[in-house]
Image 1 (cartoon, one colour):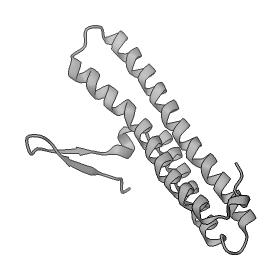
Image 2 (cartoon, rainbow, N blue to C red):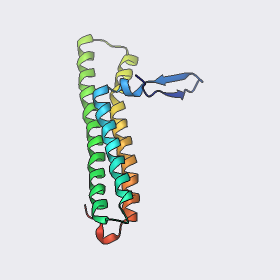
Image 3 (spheres, rainbow, N blue to C red):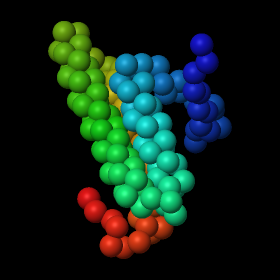
Length: 140
């Protein structure tokens, strides 16, 4: 199974590889990815129907908006669930090294970041689609 791997160059030229999809939790990251793909699908369908049917484009605009908001909400829900489980683990362990705590926080914020990415990408498409639609046809 192929997964997304992003490599960042650190301050001291050390490569930091993060397997974002599995680190964030495959269940919620899959759901957020589905929301992103759905929002992109609705946007593309809306762009294809701008000149044919502005009513259908308006419907696709609303669906893309809903999909982006769902992705954002699921990202923050997964982040909160991750933080709760991390704090439960820390409480059970007692005295914990701060680096372990920081690593847990980083992982819990991956889903929130993915949800925000989904929201921003979809919102950019929504803004462009709204600019292409006649002003009297836009409703939300």
